[in-house]
Length: 309
Image 1: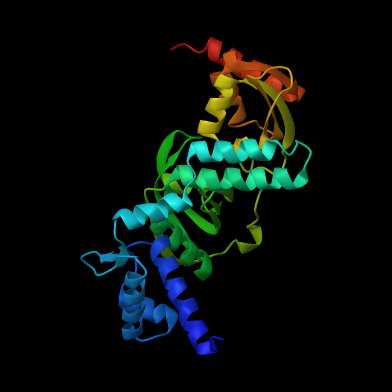
Image 2: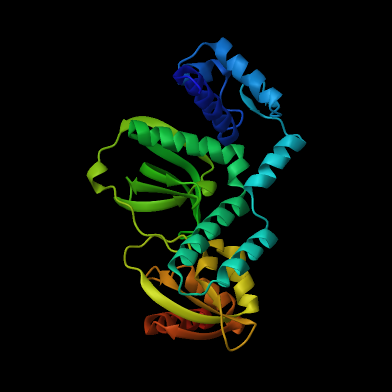
């Protein structure tokens, strides 16, 4: 049986390897030694063990380490990322168990989230991981951060935002924050932040920090409503390409092989969903509920017709 010391060493080595995979070319040997409370010579031994196991390491001009971009690294990446074909096979297999199985529904949601992450390719994106690292540090230290050159879809603008970030979700590509300028909770796509700066200023609004529910369109809202649509294959494909997490809420209909029912809870303003419906109107067979969604689409369609281009 392994001694406590041996087990601790193995655990440390695995954590170091995980750190390098999660944040490539961010940490030096010296910094890793400081983090894990060992001598730099111990880190060198860990690196030798990694090499013996087939994980080749490389470093940049600042001697920060990451996995080499060779076939071994690509093989590791292929193990962590689902292809669309692989995900379809798993989803088809799960659907055979029936539509009213709670365990199956739970697995479908997990699968959709995993596929969403792999599609984003953020797992192996250095810039994304660097921003994640800074955000997590700012949250840990309770410091205000500046989101520089943030590309906002809602306001169709690029601007700096000063916020108290209090929660991040890599799989959703979202940082939850209290916006100091707008005096309220806002949600920002991490991938749309050009640069991120941690300021020396402490939080002053912690009592106002709270998480909101998220729908498959990545919209946060605690006033979600149920929606039910029937869509054709064209809309089915578009929905999955734009919003992969919607897969957990799609079921083939019994009436036709090329139609699907889409049922789930979404934000009460129908953000994301209404744009999808209007962009794929010829492949939307029916909107069953709620009436508020039908009315909303009618209003938006009227605005579009009245607009002069």
